[in-house]
Amino acid sequence: FAVRQGYLGAAGTLSTPEEMSATAVAVLLGLTVVLAPPVEELFFRGVVQQYVADVASPAVGIAVATILFIPTHGLGIFLTANSLLAAIVVVLVLTVLSTVLGVVYARTQNLGVPILIHGGYNLLTIFVAIGVQH
Image 1 (cartoon, rainbow, N blue to C red):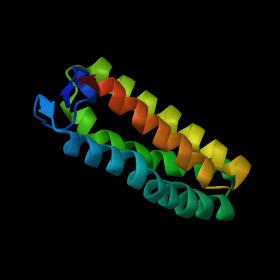
Image 2: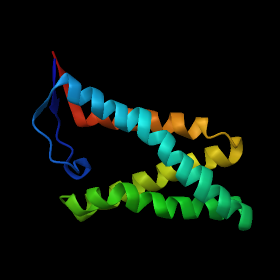
Image 3: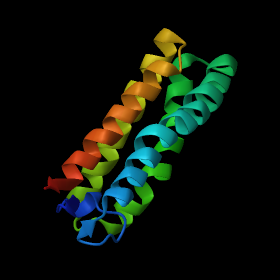
């Protein structure tokens, strides 16, 4: 089977071929759904947010982690956005996502929960960005 890339405008940060092989899709899913969420959540929630929360407050920890999360995830999207409105929407979505992940971690003190949410979000964005064809 092959996967055809859909059009998302501002969400397309990488130049990809119009059709991707099953292997490429598997690698994409593995990196963005399985590998990235634990690595990122360990850093943003487990290290940054927890450290700042310990020295300041949980709210400040969430804010600092979010401030670092947005450019890490959104700089390429922001720079390739086809309009200012699209760039603003991307920043808002990333702000909400990071805040939700931060609040969930602060309330549960369990990195597994934000990792699962982050992986689910990444999976959803992949399905929105590409259409599966048989």
